[in-house]
Image (cartoon, rainbow, N blue to C red):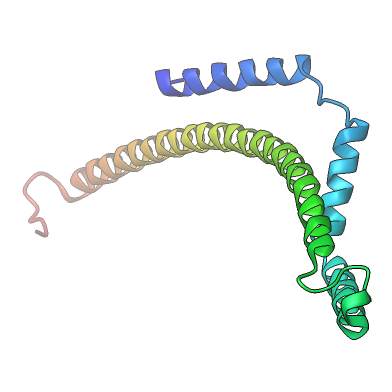
Length: 162
């Protein structure tokens, strides 16, 4: 093997050893909850339900007028939406961070596989080149033998084709 292939092989071997020694962390209640919240809040169903609820809230308070539970400018509604955003944003970020870690580990595994595949392909190219050289050597030897036979059959003074 070349120095580069040897380096790749050592890197892959070390990575395999680290993977064997480092099991995937179990999903905790918090990670499952953050994934569930992100899945719910990031869906069209949630957006439609929340839009209908907001429309009903605004319509109900606008129809009742000054005696409504949250008259215009809907300060209670604004407070509730701010509260919702304050809690869902960090929860969604936790889910995205965990997914980023999973994606990063998958990308690293893919990179390692690609390195190994590159080393294998390089080795195959070397083997094919070696086979081609052997074939060329055999063909050259056979051609020399054929020319030597022709020379013996025709004799030393026979004219040759260019």
